[in-house]
Every structure is written in structure tokens, then in C-alpha cells.
Length: 114
Length: 114
Image 1: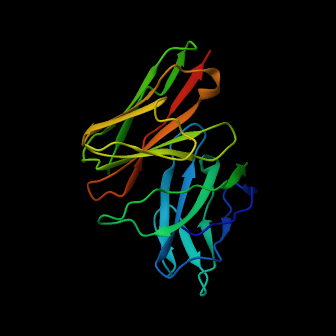
Image 2: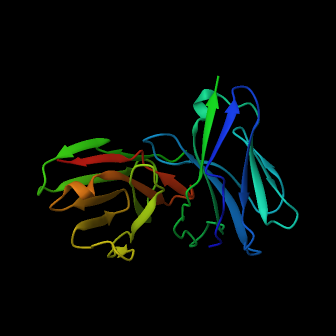
């Protein structure tokens, strides 16, 4: 699976958009970008994933550059409860018999302040 | 959605004793289970992968005789830390796959060995 690079930490004001970048310059054509987050002392929580088109769900939006070498997770209106470590993972899409391990990097510690 | 129940959520044990951690898939059959551990302020590190009815595959550097994994049924997987020592104190997390739900994480177990 391709390696990802994320900033170690970011701050965001409550109510503002949080934009978390991720570089994955060695991504392969069949690899997806997955985002998870981990709130302190809990298991990781799935947020969103995408291949090349921008994606949006009830939690966040995912913007993937045209060359797919980087992406940005957007939390449109951050709340204090969004304070967590955010992990960007690149791997072949899970499905069928392809459910290999998820490899976690160091992630980005997002702190949302009042 | 899929739920994985992980117990206990926290445990304190004496050095030299064994501790069992359980992960149960509540409404789906978990064909594969990944076990991670996480030391303070570090990322999740994969320890082993188990498939129902088969022996677990351990990552390099993880002692298979110390971390016993049992995945005898499609709804239950256990991790037993044998002869625990203070350096085994960590946050242990299971991640199951199955039932078409993709990856589902347990809530984690905080192990403290005194």
C-alpha cells in the first residue's frame, strides 16, 4: 500500500471548516484513499473514502487532486467533538476477498477550540 | 451498521498473569480479524491477522506464544496476553471484516500491567 504524509497537528476554530491535507504521491491506479479518525481511547471510526472523484457524506467531504497525488478531508463545520487524530490511508479497495490490513501512519491531531 | 463488541474496555492485572480480550461481531460474521496495539501518543501497529478456523499470522517482532489469538467462530475472536509484564501495557484494538460491512473496529481495551 502507498505511503501517506500528513501534518502532525492542526488547529481549527469551532464552527469553521477544517481542511486536513494528505500527500500520497506514490498512489497506484487501483488504490483508494480512506480516512479514519480516532477520538482519544476509542477505536478508529470510518469517515469517507474515494478513488478519483470528490466524495461527500454526512460527516465530511473528500477532495482528491486530478493527479491523485494528494487529497484533502474537509469537515465543513467543525465542532469540539471533532477533536481527534485523523488518519489518511491508501490501499486497494476492500471488497470481495480483498480485505487486507489497514496500515496506519502517524495521522494529524486536529484540535478544535472554542 | 455492523458492531463489534470488545471487552473488557479496561483491565489492570498483576505482572505474570494472563489477560483475555474478546471481540464479538454482533450482527455479522467476521471472517477476518486484525489485532492492533497502540502505545501512548503513537499510531496503531498491527500485531496479527486471523481468519476463522485458521492459525493467526503474526507481524514481525510479535511473539506468537505471548499473544495467543483464537478465532474459532465467525462471531468471536480472542487475544490472550500471557505472562503479562509492564511493557505489555497498551491499548489493544480489534478490527473485523465480514458481512459486507467492510472494516469494523472494536472500542479498544486499555491494559495496565502492574
